[in-house]
Amino acid sequence: MLVKIKVKKFNIKYSRNLLTIFNSGRKSGKFFRKSLVKFEDHKQWLEKNLKEKKTNIYLGFKNNFLKPFGYVRFDKLSENQKIYEVSIAILKENYGKGLGTKMLGLALKKFKIAKKLIAIVKKKNIRSYKVFSKNFFKIQLIKKKNIMSKNPFDYKKEFYLTKEIK
Image (cartoon, rainbow, N blue to C red; front, side):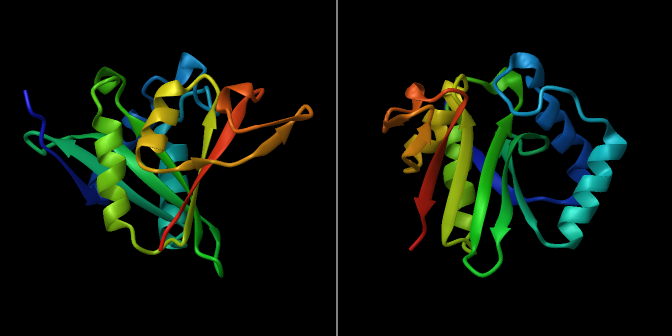
């Protein structure tokens, strides 16, 4: 069955959905934050970051387009150089279906502000690594424990992927 996907700029009415997606699969050890986030903490973080325009969020919708299945978040790292950290998350029941790859690709087409994107991925999160690499993010050389390698699985805990925007 062909799944139709689209991405929309975040709307505050999806705050709870965003938190549910963020917390989905959190205890797997594949994410930097393992504990679940409470709604009040999430609400404060969201209001602050949206007000300061440090965060841009796109929600992924499939088929009936009623409820988001995932998000792509762009967090500003550098004002002058237009560098953003990009992160993605999807509901656990959607893992392994290619939805994250498609969602990220569509969000990248809509997000035109950045000149450089950085994704930090935990070594165990092979799915996330594949999503970014299929969207043309390239591994940066990182020195960890005297290792210099292009193979992301040589690193202890995480590796960095980047994408230059022309």
